[in-house]
Length: 390
Ligand code: FDA
Image 1 (cartoon, rainbow, N blue to C red):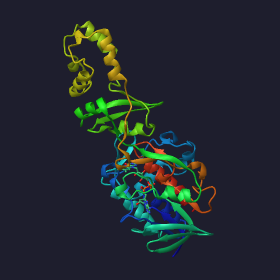
Image 2 (cartoon, helix red, strand yellow):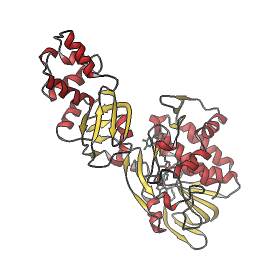
Image 3 (cartoon, helix red, strand yellow):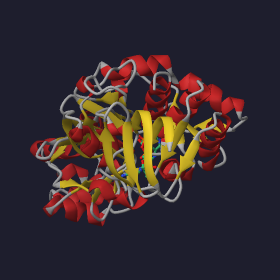
Image 4 (spheres, rainbow, N blue to C red):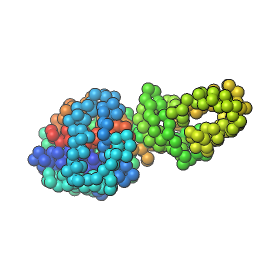
């Protein structure tokens, strides 16, 4: 079997690249070891696929080489993908913060990509295991269905999150085989796990959600936090994991819109005898303030609090500092942060600088987006741009 272009991985990036190259008249095959393509698209966004975001900026992506993503994001923008979605009359809505979701279901997005691949004459081969890759002038993939030769080989095998969906480190292995550098990778957009006292609190509050500001190093997010029986989750927590490394401290403000000192002053003026947990109940769920105050031994009527105790409470509610023991890992992570070093890749063509005809796109690269449609936009942008050159 001989193709102009073989794409390894039929996920978001691979299918976009395949359709784009096919429309240029290239003879394209997509090889995937899973029993169907686009599985992560189907499970994304709670089954409704948060397929892009109105506010895509290079600053929303994390990479050792922060300039790398700029070119592709500007050549194939969120509006280009929205035009494609509009071409198929797909209904969508903005949920929050510019995040666009399918009105109906994620399958609609996959159907668009499959229709585009079909129009472009792309061959999609599932349940195909790739055993070896060889290169002379052309590439030869030794696979479970026989040898497949191609001029160009595109690696679009994604990251390691959700191994049960077919995620593998194959893309990283290919990069290593051809001498490319790998930026150390880890699970990201993933819940934190806690130990000790913090875990006990999280367990007691499990299921409770509230809006917080969360901060690690110089990055912060204001969004919902969810206590779980293993630690902390929710969009605010997932976002900050993109910036967190093991051993680092995280700070949470549980009352992001409240100047607690001002309220303390006014309650003092009113000589309030109410329980503090009830007063705070105006801003946070009572269960939260009760357990939090019990934890620091200050669950008592407001008028009994000393100045020192009040400042202790402010510290605990406004800037709680903790060190997560880790994350839930690839089992529940949305993405893999790190990957193929973009310094070894052309930001224009996505070709490896030192290997003719070898391309890397999507999540396998060291480019990781925020939660909120950014990672799919990276898949569309990188897939489209590479598709122009493969
Ligand atoms: P992707 O993982 O999509 O595809 C890789 C493909 O390669 C798969 O089809 C796989 O089977 C195949 N493959 C892997 N190893 C192989 C091998 N050895 N041989 C052959 N084939 C192989 N992002 C977003 O923007 N909005 C959202 O709503 C969500 N939601 C979301 C939910 C969940 C639960 C997860 C896990 C992830 C998300 N994401 C997301 C992230 C998003 O799904 C992800 O960034 C993109 O799918 C990455 O696209 P790729 O094409 O690079 O990889």
